Amino acid sequence: MSVEAINEQNIFSNGNPPEIGIGKHNVGSGVLRDSDRQIINKIDAMYGARLGHLPNATSRHIALIEKPHQSTTSKMHLEYLSTMYGVRIEQMTAKEVNELPGSKLVVPYIYTADVDRVNGPNTRKWGLPRALVDALKNKAQAHLDMRELQTHGILPVNFDVTNTDRLTTDTLPFITGVEQSYDYYGVANKYPVGVMIRPQGCDGGYGNAVVEQTQRGIAYTPDGNNERTEYYSSWKAALGAAEGHVRSSSKDANPEIVVSRFIDVEDSPGMTMFMIDGESHSLGWNGQLMSANGKACVGTTTFNPISPYSKRMKSEYEDRSAEALANHIHAVAEKHGVNLNGTRGLLNVDLMIPGEAERLYLERSGQNPNIIYVAEFNPRWTNGSDAAAAVVWATRREHTAREYMQTVRGGLLAVDKEKVPYRSSEERYDRALRINEDLREQGSGVILRMPGQDTIGVIYHGDTQEARRKFLREI
Image 1 (cartoon, rainbow, N blue to C red):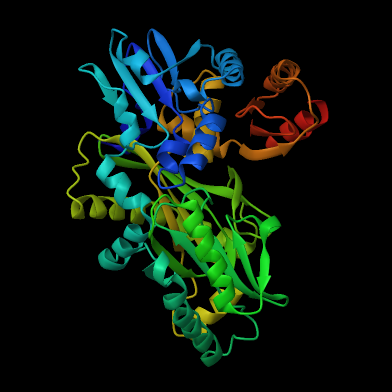
Image 2 (image 1 turned 120 degrees about the horizontal axis):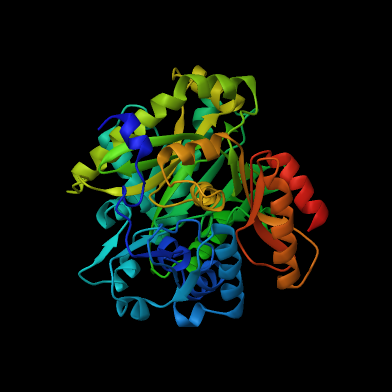
């Protein structure tokens, strides 16, 4: 199939829409399935009504939310999205959906076992095959596959795989090796040592930890949240704190853990790729809004290189990285016995452009400094792609790869938490609708992606800076 033909296809159904389109925002039970049950329930209740990835249908549109997580808040948010999207969105349980007659298409945030609660002869599921999702989502397995397959252009930062019981024991010599290498190549006084610790099932920042050398001591930061940073006098003590965090965040007693060298990063693009009947189509690089300490992503935007070097790397490597990702996904699928023929889904890769200190280290150690690292794979929708889907809905466009790419390139900014004055939900939604109506005349817009009180998730599109200024001024 030609690239042009892929561009024009409806990503969900290719001109044969179902009677019933179902979206399931399973961030808790799917994305964070390896987390503590309390965290899963909290996240599912909080995010269940956030629904960009809703397939278009001929009869009904449904948000799949189980009874414990349905609320007046989720109902009100779906009513708001119904106004924005121009279709009525109902909230229903899997049992209720299974009793409905008609053809159904379920589009989850991530295709995991919980999605198969919706079943029946006329029910189709959208997303990468579950076996491939499991291989890419498992941080340990994904890193080991990168090491084994050695796909050209897919390069992880040097790492080790251990488990919780041996985290401190195995990480101390790993850190010593990094210290010795930095000292040998003469960068020790320019490049603080650190490690990124990621359990096999962590996602979206939940469950991970950074332990790094600072002037105040050895810093330990859980979940990318610098407000929770603690300082210790030794690596062993800080790693002990990280071990405790991993145990409390995971439902498994002894999960596998990827320990990676924590590197200096110039820029952190992401890239979403659709799989349409097994063929790959990249949306190009997107930007990530990072927290103040650079340890967690707090939003997504159109990629705007932060430096001349980053701009050059985008020019040289954007297309190459798309080809490398497609090749790697097919290699991983083949290794794990997954047939991608007929597959419709998407995935994301987080990339890292080395910063000045890392480039100096690579150059002095005889390695190519002009490389792109792979941080992780996300075999699911992301903040950016889900926001693009919401914009396509709100602007009444067709759900094709071309429209998604134009949305990203035309200006897209998804902010996880905007600090706003407290207002009643009714007043906030009314104001947001009025602001969007004003912005629409200029070819821009704003969408509330999450209900909230003093912080809310917001999507801006078009002239994102002006849209954001107007929203924060008038909300």
